[in-house]
Length: 262
Image (cartoon, rainbow, N blue to C red; front, top):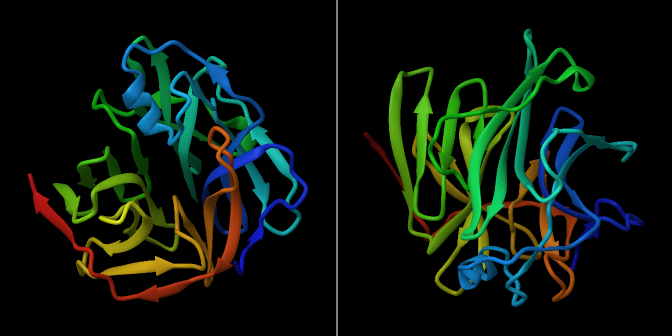
């Protein structure tokens, strides 16, 4: 496989990358935790593991893409909370970070979208929940509010003042982020009919759909120039993911994306 780890010697697990202007934000984990869930089967499917009471309480980190010096982001949430799907952008008001937090309870994990802002990474304010809608994935950028789950995404376009619902021909969706150089282009990761992960690039203005391919399934991927950075499962251990990087290929796809006003 023509890929390589982003962090060659890192002992921690790494997951869910997002790159913007020389900085990568992603998830890290150095432990597995146990929690007794009533709906064990649903939790097992969600975390792609046969050990139904185990999961990784992923945390957030950033690093300079060139130096690979990692800096943890302190969010102030309990240790057993899962932090995932991080993105960020910068403008004249400073840095805006969005992420999803999953809080464990007896039935599983309750996911919501959060945002925090600050003049710098060191001065980010406390996370603020974005709405009451359950959200396993989503983001906030300078144009869009996007949140949703396996079946559909709800998108609020602040530029056009429109609210839409996005569905795909994928069996289910697992992550939605965006192109930091074009905030109206979404990267949607999901599972196809062969139970393989792929990532689609969808332009909400032109409705063009492409598939982003690499030498391995493009699971929860982002773009770094003409390369793809994705989460690669290295073993059957619980969520044993590491970030890998490889050349990216943009191709036509058999999959469709539908966006309808609501």
